Image 1 (cartoon, protein in one colour):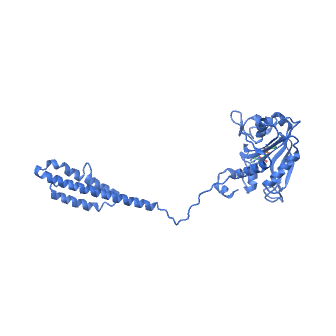
Image 2 (image 1 turned 90 degrees about the horizontal axis):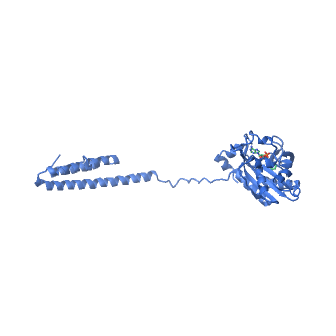
Length: 344
Ligand code: FA5
């Protein structure tokens, strides 16, 4: 290792030659370590030799080493700044926005078809003086069956139809328990509709284990079957069209007497008969009837003074008819393509 100031000039030349090779981070780091490294760096090495130099030369040698040190430090710092500037420019380039590209439209959410139909039904009935009532989805036997006059051995009470919880409660199988809760809670006159989720052990093209119903209930003095028929016709004509035919067929529900099933002319073939309506020209959309006097009694309402009607409509089926959806499961698959097609 040279001990002379003139040799230090050679060091400086060597250093300057090497700086031209420091074009990237790795070679710059190599250069820095070789010249300024704390352990084996050349500058550190020269400084450590100061003590072994004859006293008369020590001063000038020390000054020369300091000049070399300052020159090396300054240049290493400059190179660092240059590299940093180049790295920043490169990263700006790669993240650059091409302002000539067309923008991506933001995804706009839509209302689910079932919610669309619920909104519409609520609005139609609000116009007829009905308000919305709600009840729990986890119910007990009393509200879901007993108060609704289901006999002890009714098949709906069996495990094969109803989803029971371990504590003996159950997932409501229809929205009719909300009738019971409303009548226990309020004095007539009552006019409510009750939309909500219901659950059954059912699963095929038109049946789902979770589906939606809207219950309707009107209780007051002098309410007749004619009121039920008129209300349902007004509702169906608003929901579908004035041309939609409405037909009531005798039926049976433990909680209504007399009971009816309500069909509408098939909206797909206007009643001519097609595959969707099994060539009958009609489609069943709801169950209805006059509230059974025993149910009124269970709720502390005197059937000698009051009468009432009730109905229960499958909302998912209406949504399927309304939007031409062939499989009920499509409603619950969360496939955005369905939602994009169905806009209210
Ligand atoms: C009932 O649930 C009665 N609570 C309706 C009622 C209320 C009658 C008040 C009288 C007075 P039903 O089991 O028929 O009735 O069901 C009513 C509607 O729910 C059916 O017409 C159908 O549209 C729909 N529905 C029934 N099961 C399913 C299912 N698994 N998936 C989808 N919709 C269903």
